[in-house]
Length: 432
Picture: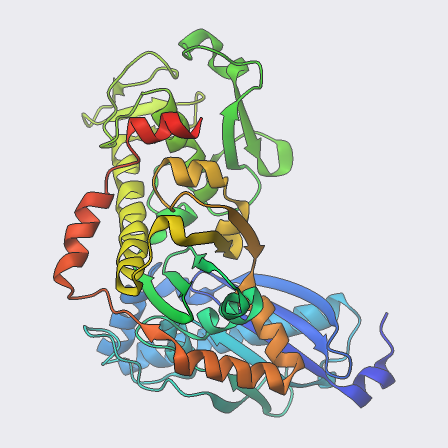
């Protein structure tokens, strides 16, 4: 239990990463800056659409929907604050302020802002500057929240917080910071210049739209690989003993979350069961690979109930193509080559659980040293909640960042088509 009188004297601050799918929050002691507790919850706005464009369309078409989206988001914040306080024996009225970071769409929907300019190209935010907004929280009077600045397009304050927490602009060498999700934010530091873009990767990286896909939770396959003694081609009889599935909770596998999906695709490429174009091309290797389903599509079966269909693979290709083409364009605009990168920093829940080798093998990220950085958006929000100097540094980041808009670029579609393919066989062999 925490000393209530001490906490009331110093006050608590709530740091929030308001994500498209998940809301992460932390309680901090304003006096010491120490994090006392963290929690997360599903963003209830998902009922209005899994992706940001569907939600923006709802809000743009109907003022009542915009109001409902705002109320759903703010209600989720109240519940998270109450949960954090209740689980840690803290009186809610100790909370005296907070910091919220989000991508541009979530920022606007949480505040109930007009999204007409954001819902269509060239995707211009109504407001990008930092704001102090009072919100009702946990049955308390209005509490001031600092909404960190946005950069441009869909690159929001979560990217600002991530850049701050990763120390991206403090590095002596070139580096990429990538937060992969429904909306993937890509930040490049190269020769003293910060460039950013966002890629519409969709829900596949979070298991959305995949026949046996699911969010991270009990039964989710987070990784898949051969046992260390596995050798030769996999056949039907040996599949259960030859493959090791990492399953949340240790029980029966129910479906693939994003990291497990990428591991599965990497394995299928290694076994030459799918080709670089993503086509299921060889049968009989993974039980019972390539058998037509009743609707005529092909599937790969890892266990009796765990399958990937040809359509699933195509959806992953679309998501991968969106992210990698964004990386390609950002690096080309900055005059950076893959060999210039000192490291690729993967952040967020997806990036932190990703097998870097699998990500390189399917061509999702360039080959480089990979650093798994955790939730940099929440870490940056915590820094800003603890320090005015960190808020000022975040504002500087937003000012100097060069936003590269992908929408409407004639070369984006060209890059996208090229990047639909997975890494070719020669590259995969070189990575073994």
